[in-house]
Length: 297
Image 1 (spheres, rainbow, N blue to C red):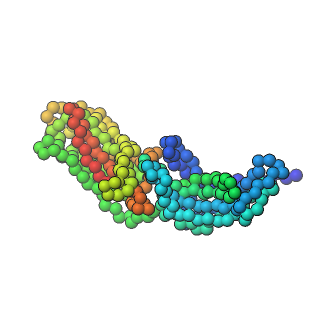
Image 2 (image 1 turned 90 degrees about the vertical axis):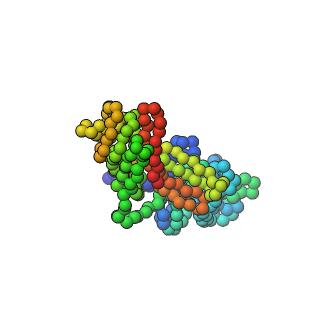
């Protein structure tokens, strides 16, 4: 007999950080995609009957604030009946399909809030319902004009320190590379250390009762010590600083790779519940451990 090949169908998956901080893997969907599958109900024993008042499946998009867990907000709630009231006498399968489902927001697991999508199957019974949930991950796709202005900032202390830094654009995707340059206009202090930190700022609620949390999600060491005129300058290089040096026009190129860091898209007033934004924080430390910093949204 001729051998037949083996056909395997796989679905795209993605990872998200769970409430316990561990990475979880779930099936991945996009806005407008159809969600379909099969619910399998297996009886525990042969010749067993399972009486029920109906079987249904729900697709739910939900925002939950951790300090107010009894007040979830469902921004999507779709229901399909799989079986009318009756009894199951054998293992059974039920196909379902939610056609072209709108999924307006990105899945998100934050410090004080989470936004999740999940399927919930319920076998309705007279005493206790049987339920099972399965989480899904949703990614949203966005497009922006090619033209994007660069970012320019400066940090300084009068007659002591003046540093300008420039990034090549104002929007970055999660696998992007931040390219820029730091210019030393005036340096009359001994710089011991300089770094750029990506800070995630999460705000839940609004007004005086808003809960705001910040988290450092990535840190890039730029240099130890200030650059000296005429010496080779590379990111992460360690350079000695002579006393009383005043530098004009010195610069350090920067390339910061975002891939591999725990980043999510910027979110603005999602469901009128929360917002997420990112800031670039330039930090300088002098020999007396004084810190100078500048943030840019």
